[in-house]
Image (cartoon, rainbow, N blue to C red):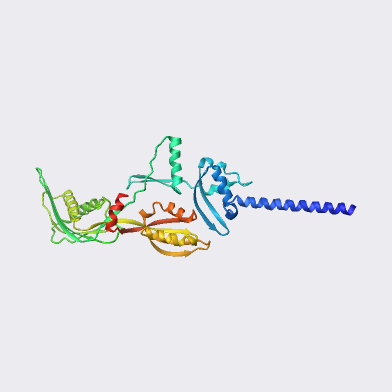
Length: 357
């Protein structure tokens, strides 16, 4: 009988040790779950259910596979972040605190727009709603304007005279300038002079260049700045009394305006290098989407974490709503970034459509 009682006590003690060990291990798992890594396969539906029931889930940025885990990128209402504390015994606040995307804003002096950047359309709409409810400010959202440029495709030599007499000293300046395309859109203009015999004194060369600087600030198609033009001063004439720097500057501006009628001006649009990170199953759909947007796929790479990196070159105007398109194609399982990569000439049949945007 005593042996049975002793055996029963040992068995009970063993059960208690095992139970304590299980509890400790479970606690360790829970602590792991409070990090920024989640076992998404088991917890995806539960997390989404809790957030949706609390009406605090606004938008999801990305579900990116990282080893055996997925990283969650959610945007939630900032005021409600403290409510993220119910997932069995875990604290979701710790999970989400590193993935609350801050709003960015920029005052674009060229397009005269106050631009705001978020992780999606729902994010921006929530910001507008908060401005309305908290500060009584009505905000109207519109598409961001693209900063186009203009250039020329032909060469032409233009001679222009500026002469004005208004009592006393008059104003006189005459220039002959050869305008040529450089196809180098990294700089606005190149100024050269090939004047022989002192037709235009060297003292007026800076005034001619100043006139060129003022001229390239605005083109003739959409009044955008002009890039990729070379102006060579070939000849001209001056008056010993009436000529001045202002007269030659004005003559150059008139010369540029008249020459643009013969230089075949065209529109330039900005291009970007777009890097897209997706699962392989979405590769075909994304490549098709990029082609429809006048883009070109440059390369594809397989990454260590199982994702595919798709590198594309695409017009900036075509990715203004790419966050929405990517979310739709990949069910939220996609990430992208981009950077500026120069300008390209726009086909004539697209100019009118682009300028209306």
